[in-house]
Image 1 (tube, helix red, strand yellow):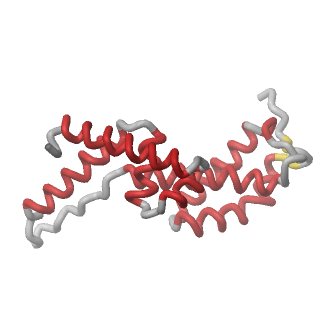
Image 2 (image 1 turned 135 degrees about the vertical axis):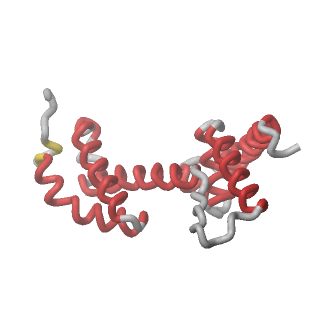
Length: 173
């Protein structure tokens, strides 16, 4: 493949043997779903191998670099989950059909998810962090690695764009 399969003195097999277990524990505690956690660990090790040239031992330990990659993948996974509407359970035959209000809420959730998906990544991330995950502006700024003022600006313009899109969809007036 033309790539050196070593990161420092570690082969890919060494990386898996040394770090897969601790990474799985780290990811599983944050995700709660073993299958998703295993996929994130696998993606972490693959990304580390593919981008081995980016690892700089002078800037930190290999473990820290791997856990940073895993943390970024966890954040991406959470954002994907939060941007999707919640699934609506289909009732069994012996249960009552959903009420008009339940159908309306499900439709609005779907439309909101669609509108959010059309925003820029920066605006969507700020809205999700503050309005859906319940973080303060300061906490969102820390998580996103930007100043608080930037989060406030992204919230303002993101919510304006979201409202405009939802007006275009006929959801709000």
